[in-house]
Length: 482
Ligand SMILES: Cc1cc2nc3c(=O)[nH]c(=O)nc-3n(C[C@H](O)[C@H](O)[C@H](O)COP(=O)(O)OP(=O)(O)OC[C@H]3O[C@@H](n4cnc5c(N)ncnc54)[C@H](O)[C@@H]3O)c2cc1C
Image (cartoon, rainbow, N blue to C red):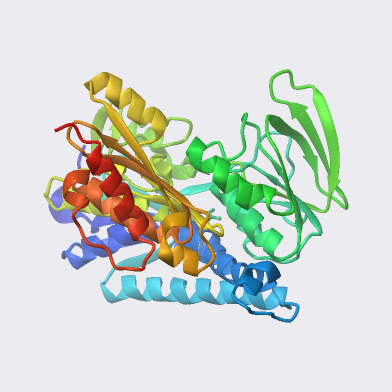
């Protein structure tokens, strides 16, 4: 039975103060709702404390080390620098300091808009009721007109791998950069594995990368991967191995690794390394939520939602219950979580909104970067056969771009996918200098379902990397069936 409206403790309770929960709580409070947010660990969640923020701080510092240590690249400008020196501890401090500043700012922002911050573990207690076990041990139940689940995700550690946090660890510990192993194995070649390989190799570590699927970087566009792997893996102190399962990892000095054949599980190789980073994906944090109290069945722990962020039970929306962010398993990215948070609150406010996943970009902050938005090759093919349109694909190269040439960073590629009948942009994949910033322009075009015909007449600043996109739009416009 739903609680009488007049008696609610809050209009909205958000469980989890990561990026998704934060944006939802702030947006709701900005619109006059009485809001509480429950957080069991540090304010700011994964992104601020163990994800985007510290990893980008480490990448910024290690990227500079890489640049200054690249004598050949510098010599191209006529620059000769002395051997580069760095202090690991100070690089780690830079990341820690940034985390602290952002965490404090975020907490103050919520306090300023009047959000009640409750420190403890939250759970559902039936319709419109949230239980909270506070850090001081007090357990109480609060009522709320609406409830948003924003409990995020944690690193996934496959069976057979033992974590000690010191010699075998996940990204949760790696971001502290407590030491620099001479030889580190990274299990997984997704974006987290790649970013840490970038950091470790820049700081002088030797990396062995193990991928269970049949090619390294399996989640990236295959055409882009060829070029990206040449730069990010082959050109560095990285030995990348595909189709191998890290079936057993035992911490210690050295760390023992057993690698097995993915298909028949037979032992193929044993390695002894100084450290192992396990970067094999993330699992939803939903076990403690007591979802049974609302008859919500998860999908491998992910909370099912519709496009408006309503939680589903047996395919039907549960009244006044919403979920956003990694725990929904959609696009597991900070800005996607935040966007979902806003959509949920807009619906709570009575404004019907849905999320447009197609226009949400993703980036890997390696040097150079990789980014993408919209549909993949495979998805485009599926859509074209279902809807009966012809697909166009053009490639635009950084080596034809004046700015990239001036930077001596002209190895890069953009691939643009579009409909040949209407010209609508369907997807883009970029590898190259500042790819993470460049993708936004295409994301905006996809959000507006724009056609390459109108986009091709938009003027871009010269000389900038954005002209790579201009060239792609112009090439694509020539292919539109008139
Ligand atoms: C190394 C790394 C690098 C990353 N880099 C990027 C990047 O560059 N760009 C990007 O977009 N994304 C990046 N991500 C992903 C990004 O961090 C996540 O997508 C984002 O944090 C998800 O936000 P969220 O709000 O869903 O969950 P989270 O940030 O995980 O927050 C959930 C919060 O809920 C709390 N919580 C859980 N259960 C309970 C409970 N029962 N009661 C109370 N509180 C609870 C948790 O303590 C946590 O603070 C990165 C992730 C990692 C690991």
